[in-house]
Length: 247
Image (cartoon, rainbow, N blue to C red; front, side):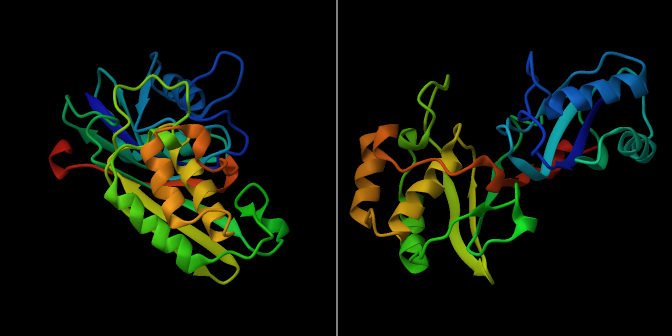
């Protein structure tokens, strides 16, 4: 049987999603907990690989187990065993060929920028003490929807077949002293959201303009784009799947 886990986590204390040889990861903690509860070696596949310090409000992962499990009971037991930073929202039985990574048709992220110093935002938002032109940043964000090749925002040493992504939403919103960037696409490249945010911030500071953004995208050169903002302001917020994967 194949099962999906819907979970959330605070990534501050973890070296990203993917299991690492010399650092603790979300995947390792989940696999160890599942293996202990199910008395069998369990390996999980996540919808994506968040970097060290990145958070997830919602992410999916799948695992295979030879026996039937009671989903609600497994959810309860996992939450009792897992550390406070990781929470299971639900366990689903899915069709055997369903895949947490390859069946996802969209992924959404938020990036939080704190405009005022607040000790409660430490490791949860990027504190930026600068005046930003939010209207201009939104004009720039709209331009992203006109392109598909985002090599300029990808980490240089990345093993991918294509740098093409279809962005369907990119918008800045202000909520009090918090500036929130929301972006949705069918897929994302490594470091892509953080590099986009850093570039849009430089546009908001009037260091770059709209023409610069289009030039940067067409260059396909990471060194032309802006800086990567810190990981702790980034949240994976939603991974969407077709309804027919569920039992």
